[in-house]
Length: 559
Ligand code: MFK
Image (tube, rainbow, N blue to C red):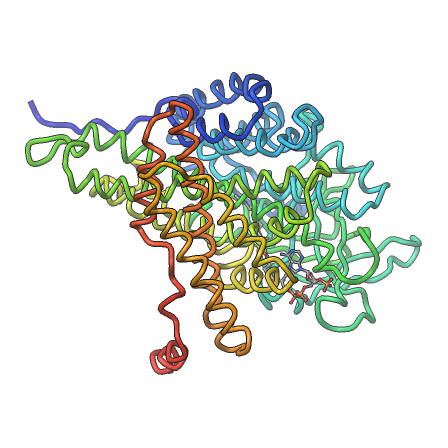
């Protein structure tokens, strides 16, 4: 009989993931873990079962933009995929945003929320994008303290009722750039007959998830000066009571490499009514709570994307036979997947450490050191995990051979969707410079180094001595590099990415070491220690080899 290959399958995405389960057991008080475990298990079952099947069945459905109705009216209707409609209901009911704002688990509310996201996110076709912005918008409005807007929008943004829940967009990128938003060209004008009201005029070049009910956006009030200080943060209610967009035209949907279910659009704003969120300047500063939240989502989504890719690759390795044995029994295949497992474990621990700190800050229990650490950890986690996610997805699809390159297996999407993670919400280089900006505040590099050393100090098992030494040497080298590079802005900027990635990878290794020690101490086996050792062998120090000649060589190479 002819041979047909079994496709890879997924199990319960909570029960099958010892890294998440051990992390939650280590971090959460037992009563909190007992309260949330049943919903994680239920979501894990759906995520690996019916939702994954629905995702594969929905593969070719993409959002469709209909600009006009049959009678010539401009309607700009965007029809999203069936799975997205289901995801919207599920996200509200399961509290994928709401859980962060509910009182039940105090400072652990964020860990609860992001554990849910981690388990189910990879089966929702990047519905995490509108959810991230919705969460960021709620946080930004609350931080801005604009009570009428808080009363108007936050109950919708944080609702568990699908009939009431809103999503929010974040319209920042213009043709002038997605990184340097200080060059925003959109103008805000006072509305002629409504005191306090404004209208917006300009083009937004990438607006993710354009089906949202509201958006936060930047515009320059007429007469304001240039740069980001002259921009203001505005709230936009996208549709009027008649269901039509208000002074907004959808020019087209973007034709993207991945995230193809996300209706990312180009918009023209021409008389779009808008309300200032907080003052009429410093718009970039005022939108940074949004950036911090979406970057945290990005980091968690990177970790969960890696986990999904590995779950499929590992299952496939058990089903696929070649050269007389299952791939899972081939030493080289095992070695390849092991390197990726260690990367995933490090990414999960780093991204959830950022989540813990966010939760502590929001519930008012953060120390000064937590505050400093959190400011640096957010960009570091985002940039480090984004790169890991692409590398892991690429290897995972390669480990499935030709099947990994064939669209209707669903596998190539893992890579196409991962590739957005180092781009949106700040590219690796922009986030590296943001890391320098964070570290420029006194004591922040020390806070990162203290965090690493405190975690390494918890390792008592001899099997963790070597990875702990690797991490300690890397943070020492990073500190030495920073001390000498500080005097030379060109050298500092040129090395920023290697420096930030060294901090990110060293943090990951330190968390892996601590986590492994806890697992050994709590009868959870030696797997986590193996992850720490393997991660150390994968390498963490990217900066020690940088010297004065590095930048000269770079100039020679790129002219
Ligand atoms: C699964 C995950 C899903 C995620 C979905 C998201 C979908 C949305 C898609 C998108 O919208 S992608 C586009 C997102 N765009 C960005 O992330 C922008 C990237 N560029 C940057 O982050 C630049 O660094 C930045 C625009 C902030 C630089 O602008 P400026 O004008 O040169 O900023 P400047 O002057 O350094 O900082 C202005 C103020 O903000 C300063 O405060 P002060 O006014 O008090 O001095 C800074 O300290 C503060 N600031 C800047 N970055 C900050 C920050 N504060 C806290 N955290 C930060 N990260």
